[in-house]
Length: 247
Image 1 (cartoon, rainbow, N blue to C red):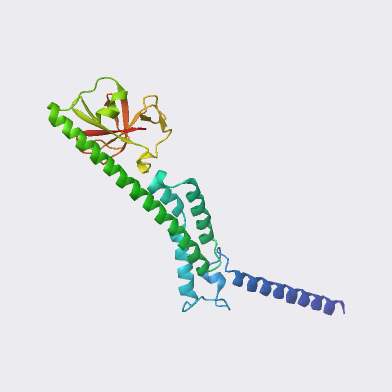
Image 2 (cartoon, rainbow, N blue to C red):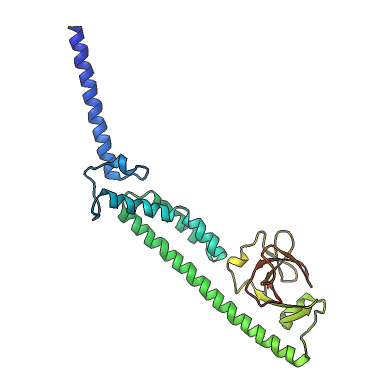
């Protein structure tokens, strides 16, 4: 009798546990948890959101996760200071939504919002670069006009405050021009310890004057009329060094 009772109790326990497991699996399927693999999900009654089968649904779902895992950091690296703190936070939140979404539709909604922010960043970059190009064109036109007039351009007179009005100076066979951080708040300004000096020039955390040069690789230390500078950007003419300023 005791043996039969023991068997009945064992069967009852197995039955209850199996029922609880089935309930758990059913609830898990409905939620599409992000950590499950296609094998975990299996061919069960889930919403395929219009996809032909589970495999195509799962492929789309995982590809979205792969494409946006770490995308906020890559956008920040690519666009630097063009990305505001608010935009970075919004993209981080959206990235987390994509990675932990319970459906492809939820991913698509977050992706749409994410890419809208990227478009705003791209537009800000293009606008700033266009303004910078116009500013540089104006400075170069003025500078070359002065060079033609005085037969070779102005030499540095030792006074940093005169640099703004001169626009261009020559020192040691190198042509120096300036451009303002207020016009170009971009990737080139993603500089450790960037700050404005008493002379309105831009310095890094090590006290180097921040410059751009197409003749030297980034990170190169160069002599300038204003002290040692470090190359953080390029894009200027060969033979010219652009000096970051706060003018």
